[in-house]
Length: 103
Image 1: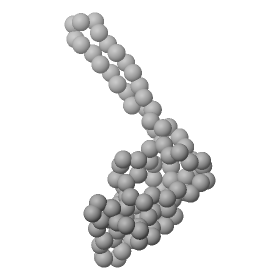
Image 2: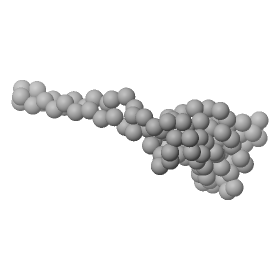
Image 3: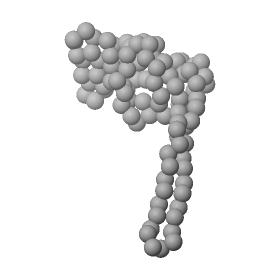
Image 4: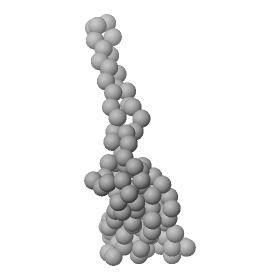
C-alpha cells in the first residue's frame, strides 16, 4: 500500500515505515504529524484517485529530527570583467517516518 501526498508544496510517494527528508516542519522532534492532502492511494492494485485530494484520507508520520541539507554552491562569473561572486546555501529539513496511511 502506498500513497502520494503533498508535504510542504512537494509531492512524495510514501509507504508505511518509510523514512524521508522534507522541508522543515513546525513540530518538535518525536511529535506526530498528520498530512490530509492525499492525492492518490494504491491498496494492492485498487487505486483511489482524488480530485484534487481524497476526502477523509490522511497520512500520519513521526518527526525523527531536524537538520540542514548539503550545501548548494552558487558561483557567478563574468569573464574578462573581473567579476566573481561565490555564495552558498543550506536548506533546513526535517526527517520523518511514515507511521500509517488511512483511507
